[in-house]
Image (cartoon, rainbow, N blue to C red):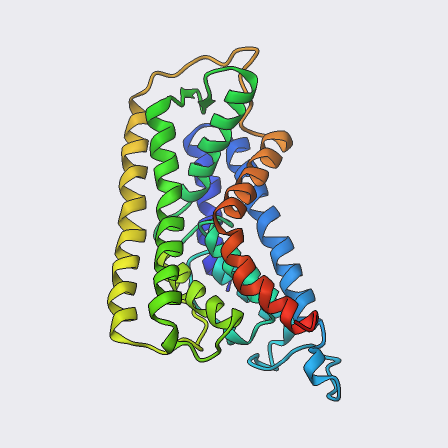
Length: 303
């Protein structure tokens, strides 16, 4: 549990040292913690809530179906948020047995690009792509050319950052649509939860995670398409990131002026946090509404 968070967290400190300003790395660390801590607490609270269909059973310890009693809810919630906030993929509980919104939080952490704090084999570039987009949006609002770490973020850099952030949503939503239309026969739980299983499968594969909702049965079509999604989700993001790194490295360093947006501190950290959530919500909320949210309403709302 510790190494999978220590390694990407160490990269944030290494980033601060590499750019000569530890405040940059600490700001990114604060954003990562602001994403991970509420997610962990949310999963714990949702799993501690009794299941209305088991009203006659003692549920004082929470919903323990599919979970290790020796770990309990607290360590399960920490592990679930940790494995989906990074691209670890290891599990200590059956994610398919999580409450609808508990599984939805795990899904959303992957959908954000596993940026809390970073993915295995990919590091912190997902968070940096969001930072560049955040700087670009802020530059539009104040009417200045956006800058990040003393380098101008022009049209080319913005397009590369946007492309890197759009690859995963296109893969996840496109192949989930295929699964809902043609691969529903492999779903063990028809309805909103079955849709969540398909959505989770392609989200996990596109983000190089590896965890799964086990109710989705394997088939040759899912295996072949899953391999394609993993390949595209990895390299179609890495390539624009490498081109973007080259473009920023070749750019001339610009001296900070009175109107330069500081990319460290509480204000920028809060702005970056909101941009990460906003981009994730715009891309994936309709799909989450059809899956985990509808499943939650059916379970607790009597639908």
